[in-house]
Structures are given as structure tokens and as C-alpha cells.
Figure 1 (cartoon, helix red, strand yellow):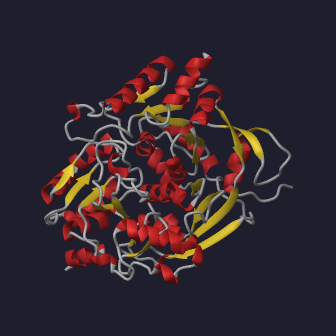
Figure 2: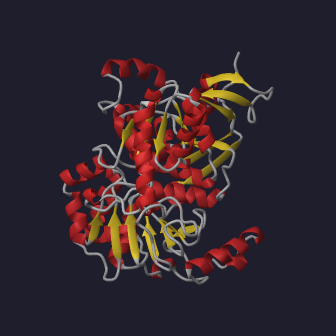
Figure 3: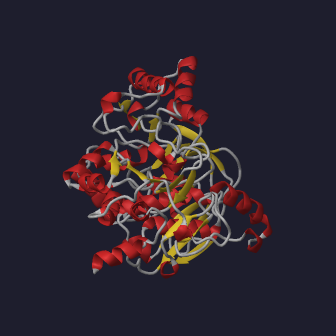
Length: 478
């Protein structure tokens, strides 16, 4: 009789080609079969160059897709091209690699172009039980579909393309239970930011993190993707939820999804994809959703966060091992201990990224912006997560709300999430951002980033400072 297994272990066991050591459990090394990968123009060039130098083909070209997203301009006029010559060369080499190795690529002008972790789900290419590895740490996003997704390095990308396998070490497992019913004004971004604050930036390091609980079950798929996406910021190598009927609905009818007949047959298997009763986890964490308020970061790590109605912490009151980091972060961010977060003015507002640029995110932000204007002196931008999202938003009139409020309605791409394109902060500029990382210089050298939900960004853009979005919602309800 087999011992009860977690869902993570069950999926890994199904994809293990062979063991590479004698370890049983976490630390076991194996050759792991990978079902699919997505490639981008920034992390794949060296891998393709390695294949060329060795004279190797891609083993299963149909198991890979390529998307331009990191370095491209998001200027409203696509015909203006890419201003940076180095970025243009990366994009051109990427397209050449697609042609030479037989991989389907979505370049800047493709109607399906967008951020990779937005594009693949909207194609119906991510399904329960799959293993997806890619050259981006936020590949954890795909766990929202009951898949195992994780980021890999350039040398691993080359090995994966050549063999469809990876050398892999089995992780420890952790279960995060989110208890309670999500109240109005609390978003999936707030849930995951509260979890990261609770366990720390390395609280789930070396673990596969499974999310369970009523609050998770109630979320739609796009909200689950936000949580799995940002779970990497607490150190999780993998993050996922067991699949349910919402997953099936999210896949059905998509451009690259299997036929309805095949999906019906697959559903019988997918309903069994969950941790066995009695399965033991190496770690447990619980979070009561009633204790969560809209979250915002004050420092330079996603775990340096508080609720919007809190103040900047005093490093003296923190544990000794956190004081130096807090002091550095507060100095970099230009804040003072005891300062109310709601009093912090902003220069920029940005809605976008693989974390929060899907249609539901834009709808939530637009609901706050409708009938309002961005504060004087604030430059506000929105970059939809994909060209498909952009078209859908325009068809629904969401773009008009953003434009009328004073937001720049831009094209799709990673944009201001990271300083790899022309959307960057100037030194000292402070930005309310729906992105996933607030590291020093992440959005531009000397730039200061406050992470929050898209609705919170919209509210801050209107107020001209960080603010509790629930006050805006209350006004709308009057």
C-alpha cells in the first residue's frame, strides 16, 4: 500500500524518467520530463547559440512557444519600432531562432504578442498535471491550473530544448491555508502580499507551495494566477492549487486547447489531481483573510510590506537580523520611521506585469477611475498583459476610462516591471505599481517602487499619494 502523497509529489512522480541518486523524498535527484516551455527574447539567446555550436536540433519544437515581451517598447504606436538597437537585435535573433529551429514565435507585431505568463493561459496551453519549465522565475503562475511550473537558467533551457528533460531535485512541500471569505476591497494581490509579509522573503525557500482553503476556492482563475505568480517572492520554487471546474472552463474553447471531446475525457483524470487525504507536508502556514487589509510595500523587498493604514516601521523595533536591511530600505525609499503610508506622495503610477495586467485587473482599476482624473503631477501608465487583453479591454470600453482619467494606454509587454526597455523611472521617482518586485533599481536606477493591487494603484494615481482604495469604493457606493 502506497503512503499518501501530496499533489506536487504525484505530478513529479509521473514525470520522473529515472532517479539519479538514492535519496527518497526531498533532495532526490532525477531526470524529469518537461511537457512544455515558453521562451522569451531575453533569456533564450545563449541557449539557442549553444544548440547551434553543438549542431543539435530542438527535440520537440511543438512543445515550445516563443513570445517577445521583456525588451520591446510599449509605445502606443507599434510602427515606431524599438528605440534601443541592442533590444532590436535581441528581437531579431529571437525571430531567427524560431525560424531555424521550427518553433512558433509571437513577435512584436503578432496579434497574440504579450507577456508570456499571460499569453500561454489565454491560448489554453496550460493544463492540469503538466510540468512547465521556462527561463523566468514567475513560471510559477501556471500552478493556478493545477500544473507544476518553475523557472530555470539559460544552460537548463538549452538542455530542455535538446532533450525535453531536466536534471531536477525534489522539493520539500508546504501547505498554505487561506481561511475565510474574501471581503470587499481585498484582492488576490493583498492575500499573497500578506502571506509574504508573514513568512518572509525566504519563508518557502526550497518548497513547493500548495494553496488551499475557502478563500482560494472562491477565486477566479486570474486571481489564482496572481497568487501563484507572486509566491516566488517568498522563496517558493513551485506554487499551485488543485484544479477544479473553473480551470476546465478557463481552458475550454481557447485557441490551442484540446477539443471538447478530449477535454471531457481528460476531466476524469483531472478531478483526481489533489493531495491524498493524510498526505504529510514539510511545512504548514495559515492566514485568516479577515485579518488582511489592502497591502503596500514600504521597502525594497516584497516582504517589507504593511497595510495601507499602517506606518513605516522603526528598525529598532524589528528583530536584529532585519534591522540593517530595514534601515537601508527606508533610506533608499526616502521615508522616515513612523511615517504614515497614506501620506506618501507619488510621481508615477503603473498598472501592468505578469502579476496584474489581465482583463479582470484592468476592470477593477477602471471601476476606481471612472469619472475621476489622475492627480496633477502624476504620470500614469497602463500596459495590458497581452495584445488579446488590450483588444478585449478596448471592445469593453475600458481603454476609454483609462484615457479619460489621464492614463497612458500603452501596448503589451513587461514594460515598467523591470528596467529592460524604455519604460523606466528616473532616479528618485516614486511609483505606485501593480508589479511583483520592488528591488533597488528594479524599475530604473534610483527608482522607488511601492507594490500594491491594480485598484490601489488607480486610487493612488487619483489621490496623488498612497491611499486606501476602500475609501473610493465607499464613495462610489453612496
